[in-house]
Picture 1 (tube, rainbow, N blue to C red):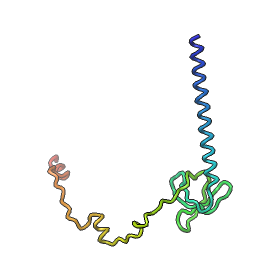
Picture 2 (picture 1 turned 120 degrees about the vertical axis):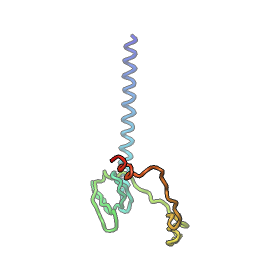
Picture 3 (picture 1 turned 120 degrees about the horizontal axis):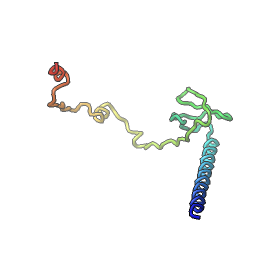
Picture 4 (picture 1 turned 180 degrees about the vertical axis):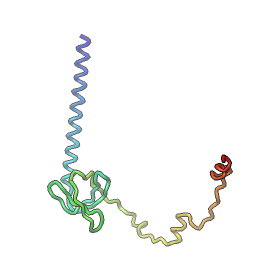
Length: 131
């Protein structure tokens, strides 16, 4: 009797896992279909290989992507991983003009850099000592 209850419990657990697995697959399929339907010319996308581009033309199973001005490539629609939403640029920061002095200050140029002194003998000296 105890073995029968254990087997029923095991089959029940397997059944529950199968139901949840199929529900997750259905949700993923719906999301993928919605993504493919939302691809229209002018949309910024990222491919599965991580390349960002703009959609210029859409066919049944292929899309044309502009990866840089005047450079067009043809891809399978399934290669689109996600639609990229442009990041808003802070207008105050974008309007700031930087000159060479600002870049030198930010990069640390023009500052006195203290030499690092190492008390250990150099590799060349150590190799001479071995010989």
